[in-house]
Image (tube, rainbow, N blue to C red; front, side, top):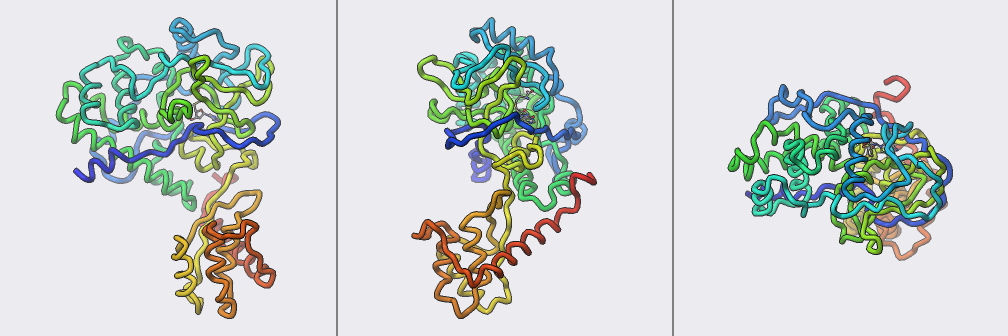
Length: 434
Ligand SMILES: C[S@@+](CC[C@H](N)C(=O)[O-])C[C@H]1O[C@@H](n2cnc3c(N)ncnc32)[C@H](O)[C@@H]1O
């Protein structure tokens, strides 16, 4: 039982715009490109309760990722259901397959969308199959697994669900690392920490499904038949949640699927995000640049590295186009260092260890990473500085300006360069050859 609740209460990473971002100026169009990678639906090399044959069948609902037919039906249904007239329409776009494109001039600072709460899917939404909803609520299933099950339940009801037009316009196979096989993760993400995070995420989804199956689905097979509620459909619904679920700050951080708003693609050149607007009582975003008719309108999914974008949304920004891109560099203490023990103790005192990972951005490294590197190369005759270095590496230093040891500078930079080189050397494939 302990295992069961651990998996069910796993909180997945929030992944869509969540909170206001600090202001900065960005100009120009987004050069982001999709990671065009469609793979079979096999999930991992680990044994799973569902047969691979059933996973290979396509999902019977949703549409091709670039389908506009279902998108126009969605548009029509939304306007009949209370979505006010829009200044944007769903169209094929260069960045993101389908997106929202300006039909009229849109000014900087305009509020757009106004999706009413009645058109939003949350954990409180009514279930078309009331009994199934009651069972899930009685079992206190947390929001993410609840929403994943809700989506499958509504999808399987097709025309009898009020969300039929929405679900028909969702991609049948969202771009997602959940669909990558273990060998694909090993091949293409061999040296990236995203590989481990993807494996962890796949394992979480598998664990969540297995847990729901044991605890609930197997007890109510007429409400949750395995032909519908299985690993394959859960991979789909979690893929949809990871790439489309929004956290709404003004609704106490409630998570929601917002039809129409979830047709907006990401650009790292804008900072605006979706939120509930109390005055208009709808989901809106405020533009932070102007748009001319025909231009794609963007929001920000958050300041994310390319790896994080790949993990949740299945795309990466074009090389050099993402100012928030970073990789994690692993810095180890040298085991043959005479002061290894003292250095490790100093690190542990500040909650650090060896090796320790630090984010490395194209624009530079953090003071913390530099401080850790100082400690690694620091000679025994400077042992009185170990603690100061460890404190600065943990960001618990009293000096905000960072520490500076000109006498260690060259060695420190050489150490960082060596770490970068050994990290790069683990990559066996590069874009040019793959
Ligand atoms: C919230 S949906 C946006 C609507 C989506 N384009 C559609 O047609 O349904 C998020 C998905 O859009 C795509 N996407 C969003 N921003 C992108 C970008 N800058 N470049 C490439 N693909 C993007 C990715 O496939 C992502 O998983």
